[in-house]
Image (cartoon, rainbow, N blue to C red):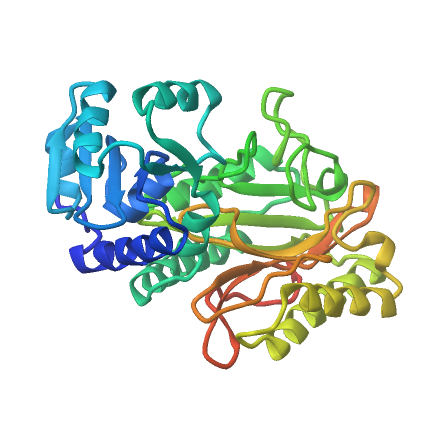
Length: 395
C-alpha cells in the first residue's frame, strides 16, 4: 500500500526544535510514547518509543510492527525492541547515568510512570508536556497543506447537506449519511484529543433543544447522544421544521484536522436566533480583522465578549447553563492543541498557529446558533482555511 509518509526533512526539523528546547531546559533526553506525539516526531503510530537525546541522533525503538515502522518512519535509526527493560538499558548506555529524562506526564498513566521510574532508577524524570505542545503548536507549510486538504474534505461534506437534510429524519440517521461521505473520501474516523476523558466521534450534530442538552464535553454544545455510555452529539431526536440544525464536524486528512460548524434549517428560524447568528459572524469577522502575531488571546476573547454584551446576548454566549470560557483552540493532530483563546488566559499568538474559532449562542429548548472555522495566523493577519457560506442555510 503506497501511503504518503512524513518526509525525513520535516521530521528532523521538528526534532531539532525539540532538542533546542531540551537544551534550554537542561533536559538530557526525551522519551516520546503517546501516539499523537510519536506520529508528529517519527511519522509512525506503531507500538514504539522514540528517544531524542539533547545531543546526538534519535532512535526509534519498535515492538510491533517493526516492518511497518521501517516503511512509515524516516528516522535514520530504527531498532527492534524486545521489551522495555532492554530499551532502557540501551538508552542508559547512550545517555549515561544520573541524567534526567523527559516524559509526557500530562498523558502518561501513573502505573506506566512508576514502571519507567524503576527502569531508570538513577535518572530524574522531568515533565516535557508543555515543551512538546508548544513545539507542535507552530505549524509548518507541510502541515498547513494537510490542514487545507482537510478543509476541502469538509467543504465536500457541508455541500452535501442540502441534499440530505429532510424533515423527520433522526439526527443519528442524518449524521450517518454525512459520516459516510467523510469515510468514502478518506477520513480516518478517529478524532484525537489530549485532554483526560475527553473523547469525540466526528464532532457534534444536533437540532433544536438537543443543541443545548448538557454534556460532559468541554465545549459549548453537548447533545444527548444515543446512550449514557457516550452522552454527546446526535440522538434519536427527529429533526423538525423551523429549528436550528448545527453540524459541527472535524475533517481529518492524513492525521491533520479542521474544526468547522454551520447552521442549517428546514424553514426560517426566529428573529432572535437570526440576530444571535449575525452576532456570531460579527465576532468572527472582528477577530479576523484584529488578529496579528503578538496579540494576546485574552484580548480577542474580550473583543468577542463585548460584541455579545452590546447585542444583549451575554447570558447566552458560549453556553446556556454551563458556560465555557474560551472561544478558540488550536487544532492539528489533536483537536485540543495550543493556543487557547480564553478569558483571562495569557497566550500570545505567533505566525504558524492554527486556530478553530467558534463563537456560539445557546438558548435552552430553542437550540443554538453560531459558526466555527479553522484559521492560520500569518505574518500580518488571521487567514481562513475552512470555507463555506457563513449565513444560516435555509432549505
